Length: 259
Image (tube, rainbow, N blue to C red):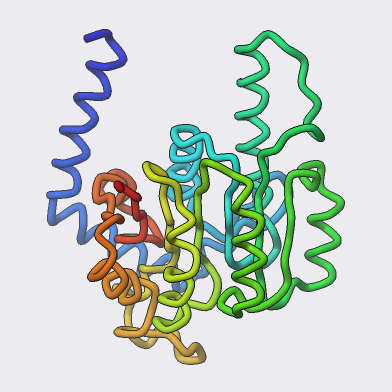
């Protein structure tokens, strides 16, 4: 076992202990409740675009993308486009590293790696900003409901040309909508890759935090995940990610496809 392997072995033990620490879990939940009341996740950008995620989840996603090395990342929910830009920039780094290892020059416009974003309402100012971004050549967007049959079919057609696929669900957060997204898009996830369901934290937040939203306790992404997993044993919740991040909008939302 080399020094890096020793370090990783220690981390695995420490992460398990961290996740089992009730005091740390309580402190983390208390912080999340207070931070969400201040719209904490809205205050970060990635390469100049609002990303609307916790930094912890951004780092977690970076680790997954580096490990999986996907050819295609499918994302429902676009907003300001920061998540698309993040994913595209990670794919750019994968291409760069591949080129360095192969000892060849690389033209980004020749890459097959892509990010596919779906949103029911891609606002004109956001679309323009995304299309003007240096990462734009790696991004494809589809406007329409992510659970509409014609949109699902378009996504499946795009996905048919790729081998390693990572899926991220972050649009409408009702149980019914997320469950429909899982049924449509989770099967596109490659074995050993992930379908990441964001905002499962809604189930754990104070019930009065969403007075003007159609989702709340009992009706949110986490309840959809629990329902989906009852009949889809090819996916498992990666609890190690939850225990590592502690502060996350996606507890129980990092679903690894194991078969």
